[in-house]
Length: 263
Image (cartoon, rainbow, N blue to C red; front, side):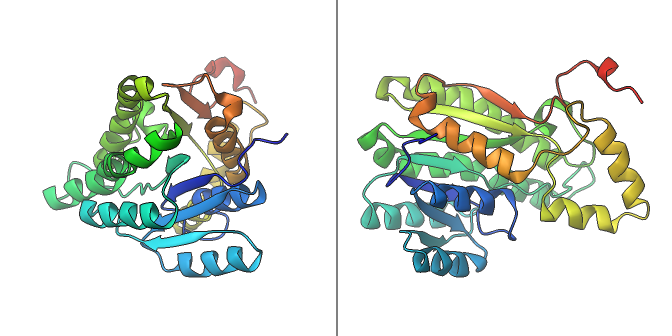
């Protein structure tokens, strides 16, 4: 299916993660569709990704940005404005489940909010004039933690709950401009970061098997590619009448009846 993304400027935050991470997979999938990926991230891997894409003949950009600093985000938006003059879609992807729980310092809690939620607001705010020019749209990457809780991660849970609230608020705010806003809610996805976390556990293999058994559809984790595919469909004109929605890509993990989970 041609999603009509060729030549579209798509800004993706936190997308210079390890190969195979959700953000990086979104970038590669956009490039394959002929879109123009603009990576806004603090990780210097972005330099290599930009070069790799440009060597493939793809117009791509990396703007090194500490997403916990709204002034750097404002400067990133100015750079995008100067280079492209428009934003067809903004994908707020950055997110770190940082373990800032009730026993964390106030500084750690506030940092979690800045990175995982305030950055979404700042990106939307500073990219809004460019989105208005072309009736672009916003896609926020959320987490099941906003809906279920997890334990020991108050900052991340509060942030992701806020992200869902912002999604609905912006859908209302921006409807008069023809700008859509949706969220993708992710549960258990097999990413390099997830793999690294499992390996830190003494009983990692056992824990992984226990998690996988609880995913109703096919008893497997969602792949980053499946998430990327949903993201591209949602920002495309194929989803032109979808706004204010929380689209859960999780094999039924969060919402389906637990009676499905039989041995």
